Image 1 (tube, helix red, strand yellow):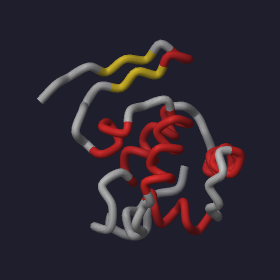
Image 2 (tube, helix red, strand yellow):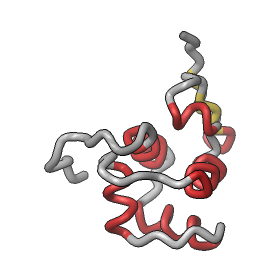
Image 3 (cartoon, rainbow, N blue to C red):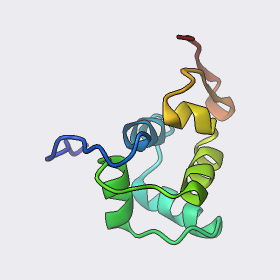
Length: 97
């Protein structure tokens, strides 16, 4: 696993959570990109890397697609809800603010 070379940016709120959930699910960036494209979101590897590094803005369409693909809520990705439910691997984290 490669370590991030740059500090996280401030262009979006969801990047670190997208990366974290993606890795928890054992999904590679290429796999996520393929699923995004099937969902109608055109993003390249550089764009996803920048999104995860929080140095790129995210659109509302991308936000919804990422939440659907990663099987988490939009609120979770935005940091408004700490509840993760990944049904396919029965992994639960429940902690409310």
